[in-house]
Image (cartoon, rainbow, N blue to C red):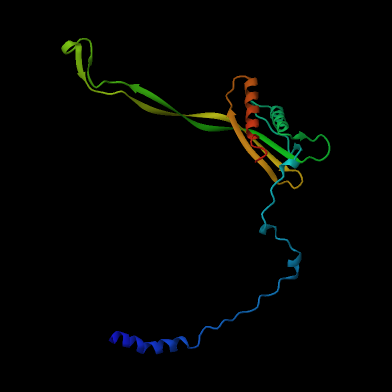
Length: 209
């Protein structure tokens, strides 16, 4: 009962405090007007770039002639790229403007390869025949069938082909990819086939879905 009387006595004081004046007064300056040039300025960064229409790319020409290596002549690289582009519906522009500019280069790089081998050993648990030693030609021994992995690391030389496609109108990059193959081919025919395989692999994802 005294607790309830105390709450009733403090209630008018709480209501009087809520009805007091608010010391915080809202105030602010008006937003300044936009500059005159803002009406005619387009902020392209505020909008996502439109999706690229790869279907309008029909022709191409070299941005710069590709360079070769000791084991791959420049003509081989150019022929391989031209053939791969043809398979994707891109034709060389013999006259007039092209839709794409093509850049291709080839270089040698070194890679580390690892090979996992297994060495087996097969000692046996329990009695086993061993040249008549022991009772009845058996001998007690301990061991187990198992294999031990051995990882061998070696260095190889690979041939890396890189292809870059650019929009001929604005010079923006359109496509870029690279692929590699072994450079230790024995015959010129094998090296040429490896080069064509690398070029085809680099362009396998064009046009992107």
